[in-house]
Length: 371
Image (tube, rainbow, N blue to C red; front, side):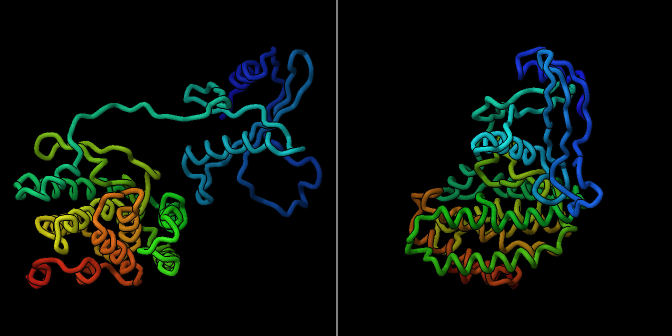
Protein backbone atom coordinates (compact mmCIF):
# COMPACT_ATOMS: atom_id res chain seq x y z
CA UNK A 1 0.00 0.00 0.00
CA UNK A 2 1.48 3.35 -1.07
CA UNK A 3 0.58 6.25 1.23
CA UNK A 4 0.01 9.59 -0.49
CA UNK A 5 2.01 11.69 1.98
CA UNK A 6 4.91 9.24 1.93
CA UNK A 7 4.92 9.28 -1.87
CA UNK A 8 4.84 13.09 -1.96
CA UNK A 9 7.81 13.31 0.42
CA UNK A 10 9.72 10.72 -1.60
CA UNK A 11 9.16 12.55 -4.90
CA UNK A 12 10.37 15.79 -3.36
CA UNK A 13 13.61 14.09 -2.26
CA UNK A 14 14.22 12.42 -5.63
CA UNK A 15 13.30 15.41 -7.80
CA UNK A 16 14.86 17.94 -5.39
CA UNK A 17 11.94 20.34 -5.86
CA UNK A 18 8.69 20.98 -4.00
CA UNK A 19 6.02 18.44 -4.96
CA UNK A 20 2.26 18.55 -4.52
CA UNK A 21 0.57 15.23 -5.16
CA UNK A 22 -2.71 15.65 -7.05
CA UNK A 23 -3.78 12.10 -7.85
CA UNK A 24 -2.69 8.50 -7.30
CA UNK A 25 -4.64 5.77 -9.08
CA UNK A 26 -4.18 2.45 -10.88
CA UNK A 27 -2.85 2.97 -14.38
CA UNK A 28 -5.33 1.82 -17.00
CA UNK A 29 -5.35 1.86 -20.74
CA UNK A 30 -7.36 4.86 -21.87
CA UNK A 31 -8.28 3.39 -25.25
CA UNK A 32 -9.65 -0.03 -26.11
CA UNK A 33 -9.69 -1.31 -22.56
CA UNK A 34 -12.85 -3.35 -23.02
CA UNK A 35 -11.59 -5.10 -26.15
CA UNK A 36 -7.99 -5.61 -24.95
CA UNK A 37 -7.22 -9.35 -25.37
CA UNK A 38 -4.47 -9.21 -22.74
CA UNK A 39 -5.96 -9.91 -19.32
CA UNK A 40 -2.85 -10.40 -17.20
CA UNK A 41 0.54 -8.77 -16.70
CA UNK A 42 3.34 -8.92 -14.18
CA UNK A 43 3.04 -5.27 -13.23
CA UNK A 44 0.65 -3.37 -10.95
CA UNK A 45 1.45 0.22 -11.99
CA UNK A 46 0.08 3.37 -10.39
CA UNK A 47 -0.45 6.64 -12.23
CA UNK A 48 0.88 9.68 -10.39
CA UNK A 49 -0.24 13.23 -11.13
CA UNK A 50 1.54 16.04 -9.31
CA UNK A 51 2.89 19.56 -9.41
CA UNK A 52 6.68 19.72 -9.41
CA UNK A 53 7.84 23.20 -8.58
CA UNK A 54 4.38 24.36 -9.59
CA UNK A 55 4.55 22.64 -13.00
CA UNK A 56 2.21 19.71 -13.81
CA UNK A 57 3.99 16.38 -14.32
CA UNK A 58 2.99 12.74 -14.55
CA UNK A 59 4.81 9.58 -13.49
CA UNK A 60 4.12 5.89 -13.31
CA UNK A 61 5.02 3.97 -10.17
CA UNK A 62 5.80 0.49 -11.53
CA UNK A 63 5.68 -2.57 -9.31
CA UNK A 64 5.80 -6.33 -9.86
CA UNK A 65 2.96 -8.33 -8.40
CA UNK A 66 3.91 -11.08 -5.89
CA UNK A 67 2.13 -13.66 -8.01
CA UNK A 68 2.77 -17.37 -7.49
CA UNK A 69 4.67 -18.66 -10.45
CA UNK A 70 6.77 -16.69 -12.95
CA UNK A 71 9.66 -16.33 -10.48
CA UNK A 72 8.25 -13.36 -8.52
CA UNK A 73 7.41 -15.04 -5.21
CA UNK A 74 10.22 -13.51 -3.13
CA UNK A 75 10.98 -9.90 -2.31
CA UNK A 76 14.41 -10.44 -3.86
CA UNK A 77 12.77 -11.37 -7.17
CA UNK A 78 10.79 -8.14 -7.23
CA UNK A 79 13.84 -6.11 -6.18
CA UNK A 80 15.76 -7.59 -9.11
CA UNK A 81 12.99 -6.59 -11.53
CA UNK A 82 13.06 -2.99 -10.33
CA UNK A 83 16.86 -2.67 -10.32
CA UNK A 84 17.20 -4.29 -13.73
CA UNK A 85 14.46 -2.08 -15.18
CA UNK A 86 16.09 1.12 -13.90
CA UNK A 87 19.40 0.30 -15.59
CA UNK A 88 17.89 -1.12 -18.77
CA UNK A 89 15.32 1.60 -19.47
CA UNK A 90 17.91 4.37 -19.50
CA UNK A 91 20.33 2.47 -21.73
CA UNK A 92 17.95 2.14 -24.68
CA UNK A 93 17.26 4.96 -27.16
CA UNK A 94 13.68 6.27 -27.17
CA UNK A 95 12.73 4.29 -24.06
CA UNK A 96 10.77 6.16 -21.40
CA UNK A 97 13.09 7.43 -18.70
CA UNK A 98 13.41 5.74 -15.32
CA UNK A 99 13.87 8.40 -12.66
CA UNK A 100 14.67 6.18 -9.72
CA UNK A 101 14.30 2.75 -8.16
CA UNK A 102 13.27 2.47 -4.55
CA UNK A 103 11.71 0.40 -1.84
CA UNK A 104 9.02 0.80 0.79
CA UNK A 105 9.93 0.38 4.45
CA UNK A 106 7.57 -1.23 6.94
CA UNK A 107 6.86 2.26 8.24
CA UNK A 108 5.48 3.20 4.82
CA UNK A 109 8.43 5.46 3.95
CA UNK A 110 9.60 5.31 0.33
CA UNK A 111 13.41 5.14 0.00
CA UNK A 112 15.61 5.66 -3.03
CA UNK A 113 18.07 2.93 -4.04
CA UNK A 114 18.99 4.10 -7.54
CA UNK A 115 22.57 5.03 -6.62
CA UNK A 116 23.31 1.62 -5.09
CA UNK A 117 25.97 -0.38 -6.92
CA UNK A 118 26.36 -3.21 -4.41
CA UNK A 119 24.07 -4.74 -1.81
CA UNK A 120 25.01 -6.37 1.46
CA UNK A 121 23.69 -7.99 4.58
CA UNK A 122 24.79 -7.23 8.11
CA UNK A 123 24.52 -10.41 10.15
CA UNK A 124 25.58 -11.47 13.61
CA UNK A 125 28.81 -13.41 14.09
CA UNK A 126 28.46 -16.86 15.58
CA UNK A 127 31.23 -18.68 17.42
CA UNK A 128 32.10 -22.22 16.49
CA UNK A 129 34.23 -24.51 14.36
CA UNK A 130 33.20 -25.35 10.77
CA UNK A 131 31.89 -28.89 10.50
CA UNK A 132 34.17 -29.70 7.59
CA UNK A 133 37.08 -29.67 10.05
CA UNK A 134 35.43 -32.58 11.86
CA UNK A 135 35.36 -34.51 8.60
CA UNK A 136 38.92 -33.50 7.81
CA UNK A 137 40.07 -34.82 11.22
CA UNK A 138 38.46 -38.18 10.46
CA UNK A 139 40.78 -38.62 7.50
CA UNK A 140 43.62 -39.37 9.92
CA UNK A 141 42.05 -40.02 13.33
CA UNK A 142 39.57 -42.59 14.67
CA UNK A 143 35.96 -41.52 15.07
CA UNK A 144 34.77 -40.32 18.47
CA UNK A 145 31.31 -40.68 20.00
CA UNK A 146 30.68 -36.99 19.27
CA UNK A 147 31.07 -37.62 15.52
CA UNK A 148 28.10 -39.96 15.41
CA UNK A 149 26.14 -37.69 17.75
CA UNK A 150 26.70 -34.69 15.47
CA UNK A 151 25.61 -36.63 12.40
CA UNK A 152 22.42 -37.63 14.19
CA UNK A 153 21.84 -34.05 15.40
CA UNK A 154 22.12 -32.68 11.86
CA UNK A 155 19.70 -35.28 10.53
CA UNK A 156 17.24 -34.48 13.31
CA UNK A 157 17.54 -30.76 12.67
CA UNK A 158 16.67 -31.20 9.00
CA UNK A 159 13.73 -33.39 9.93
CA UNK A 160 12.53 -30.63 12.26
CA UNK A 161 12.70 -27.78 9.75
CA UNK A 162 11.33 -29.93 6.91
CA UNK A 163 8.24 -30.72 8.99
CA UNK A 164 6.81 -27.32 8.06
CA UNK A 165 5.08 -27.72 4.70
CA UNK A 166 3.57 -25.24 2.27
CA UNK A 167 0.97 -25.79 -0.40
CA UNK A 168 2.20 -23.85 -3.42
CA UNK A 169 2.56 -26.12 -6.48
CA UNK A 170 3.96 -23.37 -8.71
CA UNK A 171 6.71 -22.59 -6.16
CA UNK A 172 7.72 -26.25 -5.95
CA UNK A 173 7.80 -26.44 -9.74
CA UNK A 174 9.96 -23.33 -9.81
CA UNK A 175 12.46 -24.93 -7.43
CA UNK A 176 12.72 -28.03 -9.58
CA UNK A 177 13.03 -25.88 -12.71
CA UNK A 178 15.82 -23.90 -11.07
CA UNK A 179 17.64 -27.11 -10.11
CA UNK A 180 17.97 -27.80 -13.84
CA UNK A 181 18.38 -24.38 -15.44
CA UNK A 182 19.46 -21.75 -12.90
CA UNK A 183 22.96 -20.31 -13.18
CA UNK A 184 23.87 -21.57 -9.70
CA UNK A 185 22.47 -25.03 -10.35
CA UNK A 186 23.12 -27.88 -12.76
CA UNK A 187 23.30 -26.18 -16.15
CA UNK A 188 25.16 -23.17 -14.76
CA UNK A 189 27.71 -25.41 -13.06
CA UNK A 190 28.21 -27.42 -16.25
CA UNK A 191 28.73 -24.21 -18.23
CA UNK A 192 31.37 -23.06 -15.74
CA UNK A 193 33.55 -26.14 -16.19
CA UNK A 194 36.57 -25.54 -18.42
CA UNK A 195 35.73 -26.72 -21.92
CA UNK A 196 37.15 -28.82 -23.39
CA UNK A 197 37.65 -30.81 -20.22
CA UNK A 198 38.81 -34.43 -20.66
CA UNK A 199 36.98 -35.73 -17.59
CA UNK A 200 33.65 -34.19 -18.66
CA UNK A 201 33.38 -34.02 -22.48
CA UNK A 202 30.43 -32.29 -24.18
CA UNK A 203 28.58 -35.55 -24.82
CA UNK A 204 28.65 -36.31 -21.07
CA UNK A 205 27.26 -32.83 -20.34
CA UNK A 206 24.53 -33.40 -22.90
CA UNK A 207 23.55 -36.70 -21.28
CA UNK A 208 23.44 -35.09 -17.84
CA UNK A 209 21.26 -32.22 -19.04
CA UNK A 210 18.85 -34.49 -20.90
CA UNK A 211 18.46 -36.61 -17.78
CA UNK A 212 17.94 -33.48 -15.66
CA UNK A 213 15.10 -32.32 -17.89
CA UNK A 214 13.46 -35.73 -17.57
CA UNK A 215 13.86 -35.54 -13.80
CA UNK A 216 12.25 -32.11 -13.86
CA UNK A 217 9.07 -33.46 -15.41
CA UNK A 218 9.13 -36.53 -13.19
CA UNK A 219 9.38 -34.46 -9.99
CA UNK A 220 6.95 -31.79 -11.08
CA UNK A 221 4.07 -33.74 -9.58
CA UNK A 222 5.68 -33.98 -6.12
CA UNK A 223 4.56 -30.50 -5.07
CA UNK A 224 3.06 -31.89 -1.85
CA UNK A 225 6.67 -32.20 -0.65
CA UNK A 226 7.32 -28.44 -0.62
CA UNK A 227 8.86 -27.67 2.76
CA UNK A 228 10.88 -25.14 4.71
CA UNK A 229 14.53 -25.66 3.72
CA UNK A 230 17.98 -24.21 4.25
CA UNK A 231 19.03 -24.49 0.59
CA UNK A 232 22.81 -24.86 1.00
CA UNK A 233 23.21 -27.20 3.98
CA UNK A 234 26.84 -28.26 3.67
CA UNK A 235 29.71 -28.60 6.20
CA UNK A 236 31.16 -25.15 5.45
CA UNK A 237 27.86 -23.58 6.52
CA UNK A 238 27.68 -25.36 9.90
CA UNK A 239 29.46 -24.19 13.06
CA UNK A 240 29.76 -26.54 16.03
CA UNK A 241 30.58 -25.59 19.59
CA UNK A 242 30.58 -28.10 22.45
CA UNK A 243 28.96 -31.44 21.76
CA UNK A 244 26.01 -31.12 19.39
CA UNK A 245 25.45 -27.38 19.85
CA UNK A 246 25.62 -25.78 16.41
CA UNK A 247 24.55 -22.82 14.28
CA UNK A 248 23.82 -22.63 10.56
CA UNK A 249 25.06 -20.00 8.11
CA UNK A 250 24.19 -18.64 4.69
CA UNK A 251 20.67 -19.86 4.07
CA UNK A 252 20.13 -19.27 0.37
CA UNK A 253 17.85 -19.85 -2.60
CA UNK A 254 14.63 -19.02 -0.84
CA UNK A 255 12.66 -20.29 2.12
CA UNK A 256 10.85 -23.19 0.49
CA UNK A 257 12.02 -26.12 -1.58
CA UNK A 258 12.45 -29.85 -1.93
CA UNK A 259 13.77 -31.42 1.32
CA UNK A 260 16.00 -33.75 -0.69
CA UNK A 261 18.16 -30.75 -1.58
CA UNK A 262 19.27 -30.31 2.05
CA UNK A 263 19.70 -34.05 2.52
CA UNK A 264 21.92 -34.31 -0.55
CA UNK A 265 23.93 -31.18 0.26
CA UNK A 266 25.16 -32.58 3.56
CA UNK A 267 25.22 -36.34 3.03
CA UNK A 268 27.28 -36.23 -0.16
CA UNK A 269 30.12 -34.82 1.92
CA UNK A 270 30.34 -38.07 3.87
CA UNK A 271 30.86 -39.78 0.52
CA UNK A 272 33.34 -37.10 -0.60
CA UNK A 273 35.54 -37.33 2.48
CA UNK A 274 35.26 -41.12 2.37
CA UNK A 275 36.65 -41.02 -1.15
CA UNK A 276 39.47 -38.74 -0.03
CA UNK A 277 40.42 -41.33 2.59
CA UNK A 278 39.81 -44.29 0.26
CA UNK A 279 39.82 -46.84 -1.12
CA UNK A 280 36.22 -46.45 -2.17
CA UNK A 281 34.16 -44.67 0.49
CA UNK A 282 36.22 -45.50 3.56
CA UNK A 283 35.00 -45.72 7.13
CA UNK A 284 33.92 -44.01 9.28
CA UNK A 285 32.37 -41.92 6.50
CA UNK A 286 30.28 -44.69 5.01
CA UNK A 287 28.82 -45.46 8.41
CA UNK A 288 28.06 -41.77 9.03
CA UNK A 289 26.39 -41.55 5.61
CA UNK A 290 24.13 -44.52 6.39
CA UNK A 291 23.33 -43.24 9.87
CA UNK A 292 22.44 -39.78 8.62
CA UNK A 293 19.94 -41.19 6.12
CA UNK A 294 18.57 -43.65 8.68
CA UNK A 295 17.92 -41.00 11.34
CA UNK A 296 16.41 -38.56 8.86
CA UNK A 297 14.06 -41.11 7.31
CA UNK A 298 12.98 -42.43 10.71
CA UNK A 299 12.26 -38.92 11.97
CA UNK A 300 10.34 -37.81 8.89
CA UNK A 301 8.76 -41.04 7.69
CA UNK A 302 9.74 -39.85 4.22
CA UNK A 303 9.10 -42.85 2.02
CA UNK A 304 9.59 -40.82 -1.15
CA UNK A 305 13.07 -39.53 -0.36
CA UNK A 306 15.00 -42.03 -2.46
CA UNK A 307 12.64 -41.43 -5.39
CA UNK A 308 13.59 -37.73 -5.57
CA UNK A 309 17.22 -37.65 -4.37
CA UNK A 310 19.18 -38.50 -7.56
CA UNK A 311 19.14 -35.14 -9.42
CA UNK A 312 20.14 -33.30 -6.24
CA UNK A 313 23.04 -35.68 -5.71
CA UNK A 314 24.04 -35.20 -9.36
CA UNK A 315 24.18 -31.42 -8.89
CA UNK A 316 26.17 -31.63 -5.67
CA UNK A 317 28.61 -34.14 -7.15
CA UNK A 318 29.23 -31.82 -10.10
CA UNK A 319 30.02 -28.96 -7.71
CA UNK A 320 32.50 -30.97 -5.64
CA UNK A 321 34.14 -32.43 -8.77
CA UNK A 322 34.52 -28.94 -10.26
CA UNK A 323 38.19 -27.99 -10.77
CA UNK A 324 37.48 -24.38 -9.85
CA UNK A 325 35.52 -25.08 -6.69
CA UNK A 326 37.76 -27.91 -5.47
CA UNK A 327 41.06 -27.53 -7.35
CA UNK A 328 43.27 -29.70 -5.11
CA UNK A 329 41.38 -32.99 -4.84
CA UNK A 330 42.97 -36.12 -6.38
CA UNK A 331 41.94 -36.99 -9.91
CA UNK A 332 40.66 -40.40 -8.79
CA UNK A 333 38.19 -38.64 -6.48
CA UNK A 334 37.12 -36.23 -9.20
CA UNK A 335 36.50 -39.12 -11.59
CA UNK A 336 34.52 -41.03 -8.96
CA UNK A 337 32.31 -38.02 -8.28
CA UNK A 338 31.65 -37.48 -11.98
CA UNK A 339 30.77 -41.16 -12.33
CA UNK A 340 28.41 -40.76 -9.39
CA UNK A 341 26.78 -37.72 -11.01
CA UNK A 342 26.30 -39.69 -14.21
CA UNK A 343 24.75 -42.62 -12.38
CA UNK A 344 22.20 -40.28 -10.79
CA UNK A 345 20.94 -39.53 -14.29
CA UNK A 346 19.72 -43.08 -14.80
CA UNK A 347 16.16 -42.05 -13.87
CA UNK A 348 15.97 -44.68 -11.16
CA UNK A 349 15.44 -44.15 -7.44
CA UNK A 350 18.55 -43.74 -5.33
CA UNK A 351 19.99 -47.02 -4.08
CA UNK A 352 23.15 -48.02 -2.26
CA UNK A 353 24.28 -50.44 -4.98
CA UNK A 354 24.51 -47.50 -7.38
CA UNK A 355 26.81 -45.80 -4.89
CA UNK A 356 29.06 -48.86 -4.85
CA UNK A 357 29.22 -49.09 -8.61
CA UNK A 358 29.88 -45.42 -9.27
CA UNK A 359 32.23 -44.69 -6.38
CA UNK A 360 34.48 -47.70 -6.77
CA UNK A 361 33.17 -49.86 -3.99
CA UNK A 362 32.29 -49.33 -0.36
CA UNK A 363 34.06 -51.48 2.25
CA UNK A 364 31.51 -53.56 4.10
CA UNK A 365 28.56 -52.15 2.14
CA UNK A 366 27.16 -55.51 1.06
CA UNK A 367 27.24 -56.80 4.62
CA UNK A 368 25.62 -53.62 5.86
CA UNK A 369 22.76 -54.00 3.38
CA UNK A 370 22.23 -57.64 4.29
CA UNK A 371 22.22 -56.71 7.96
